[in-house]
Image (cartoon, rainbow, N blue to C red; front, side, top):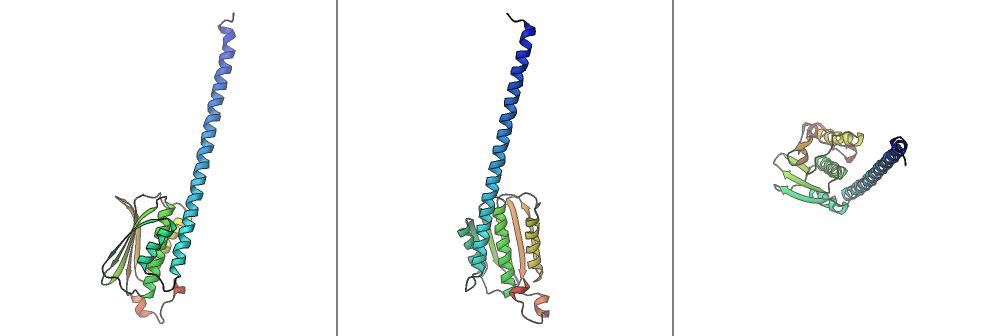
Length: 200
């Protein structure tokens, strides 16, 4: 009959095996979590790429689609769009139309990048300017990637070239991109030639 001294090595061995088993299980769970994260990131990247293709293709249709039609075309890329148009839609100066299209495209693409398939787009035709609002209910992470920062900088650059502005940030319901695009600006008046698509 073994005494306590004889049982000690067996107890230690059993405890060691139990600890090793826990380590193996934890490592397996961590690998599975990383795999799931990689699969989810890959699927999200594919959705973003598909949406970008849909929106770019729509912009080069002839005749060129309106901003409302461009936003609605995002449904073909998998987004659920709620579209609201305020005021009487009007023919936009070409620089304003192009800037609006690029801003809508980038804002909707960012919605998918942050993992939500739902967005609300509001186009407001005012006497002196068009305002574009794109909202989604999920607050994204801080803009840490180069692509996200460049996307926001691009939207601001597009608006700035026609005397407008773009702001982006969180609000109580989620995340919002808001652009003000004046129909006319000093740059339009001073430009020696009509602005072309290549200027954007």
